Image 1 (cartoon, rainbow, N blue to C red):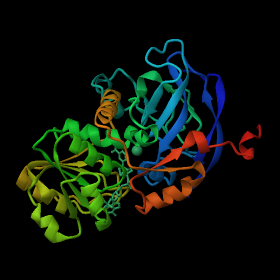
Image 2 (cartoon, rainbow, N blue to C red):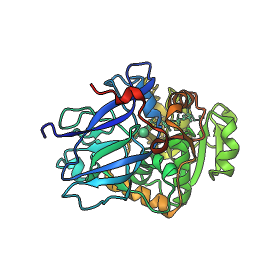
Image 3 (spheres, helix red, strand yellow):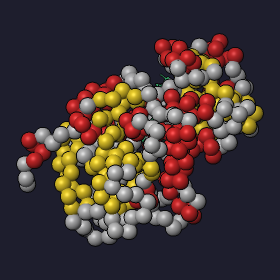
Image 4 (cartoon, rainbow, N blue to C red):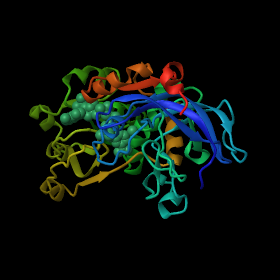
Length: 363
Ligand code: NAP
Ligand code: ZN
């Protein structure tokens, strides 16, 4: 695809490894035949945005406009778009495109396609960098967009687009979605708290494994977890040894795996979803002795993303959010890094992201 006509856009971008976001003016392509143009209403702040803004994984290109938990309202569609029309409420997650023809794409797992294009900090076909949802509007291929169920509040639904599908997908794939299953959720943050809600709606028994005793009450009384284990309390952990069929590990930092492997039953699965920048120590003996598995998972395909938001709609599941204005974003990211959020920041983009005088100066 060659360079196409463009329209002005503005957003917030990190310009270097400080990760500090500031106003940024850029352009988005004209609406192509199969493109949907939408105004961004809300965008969640995923821990991944912090890692990317600070180049913690080593592949960030600056300037970076973060944001991949995006909900918006369609303002224009291309001539060949069939699924969406102006006024529709839509969502975009971690990816914008993929090759559509490899075995992985035809298996509806576009999120693992080697040519998958990420929503923020990726390179699009016209060689421009992709800019995420901390911006006034987006232009996306219709096949990588989901429809948000009417009954869900749009601000609290935004985190479903990444946090939601990133836990829903492995729960379904690994058969941890059935009554009678006992599932552990490690790390009660953005991903973790939605995992608890999904797991309860699927009818499983859920245990939260956390470093924060302050979350015990709300884990049980508000989120509906059956059990809460303080991971640094050996007595609590010991009581649950060998009881879990699967564990979803959403921890963003280095942490010991040995106690978690101990919680698994024979043939239990530890599913790594959190993405610590540094390698973890990997104890092999407990795996061998219990025929246990450690696996990874990243977001979900488009088909299962739609299935996930529909499931959320059916069970009235959204994130617990703190709605913030765009000028609070740097403070929010600092607080997120310190674990000081219950449980997801969402930026009120449409109402608070305004072009500053600096943004409207023409080059
Ligand atoms: P988050 O809201 O910050 O939650 C992470 C949770 O991990 C914290 O709330 C905390 O829970 C726990 N934690 C933090 N530091 C810890 C430490 N040093 N030791 C033990 N536990 C610690 O982050 P998030 O947005 O949910 O993202 C979680 C991770 O998943 C990040 O690494 C992110 O990049 C990654 N991610 C992966 C995918 C994927 O598809 N695989 C998708 C999105 C995000 P407690 O207070 O309960 O201990
Ligand atoms: Zn994310």
